[in-house]
Image 1 (cartoon, rainbow, N blue to C red):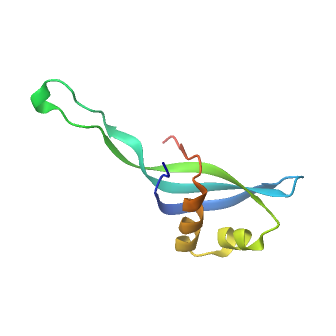
Image 2: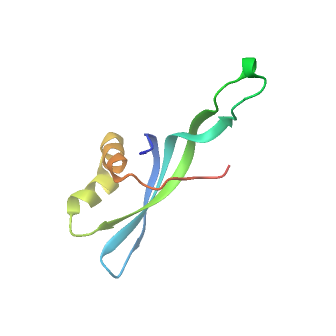
Length: 98
């Protein structure tokens, strides 16, 4: 399931690899990644589902340098353009520790 990007905190070029790929580190506010309250099962009359909230996460995106549009969106696009582009990538977001 694709995680919803709420906002972009930062997009930084990490490295250009010898194979022609650029590695970007993306830091963003992602919906429903932090457990706010665990589920309650007992007693049955007090049962409630777990509650999840947003959190700051990071992911690495490797893109080929053959398509300058990808680089342009990441380096100079608006936040909305960046969110739309990154949302399609279905990145492996890792929750950053506080």
